Each structure stands twice: as structure tokens, then as C-alpha cells.
Amino acid sequence: MADFQFLTCVPLEFLDELTPLAALDDPFRAELAARYASYMGRIGTPDGNEAASETWRSQFLDAHFPLAR
Image (cartoon, rainbow, N blue to C red):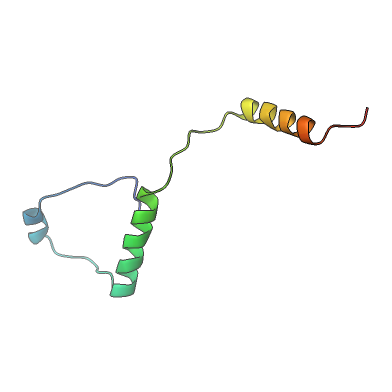
């Protein structure tokens, strides 16, 4: 599992002092890079306002599907 919300940078010299716990094989390494690019390239949207959404839905339905009165 990879959490792209929390990233940090460390100097390369610091990594040379560490012992790797695991490694990704080539197909998985490419997929991780693709998923990261997809995550970083997504379009951010604000959280929706339920009351505003309900008003918009009602206006849309009334305009396009008027009830027979």
C-alpha cells in the first residue's frame, strides 16, 4: 500500500546509510510510478455542499421534467 498524501524528501547520502527492507520488481515499479503520476495529476474539487446540490437538482428536474399540474 502506498500513501501519496504524505511524501518527504531526504538527501541521497542518507539513503546510502540505510539497509533496504524490500524492493519492487520491474512491472510493479512501473505501475507504482503510473499510479503516482495519476494521483498527482488529478483535478482537485472542493467538497460539495449538500443543500446547494439539492437546490441544483430540484431546479434541473423542474426545468427539464416539469410535473403535470
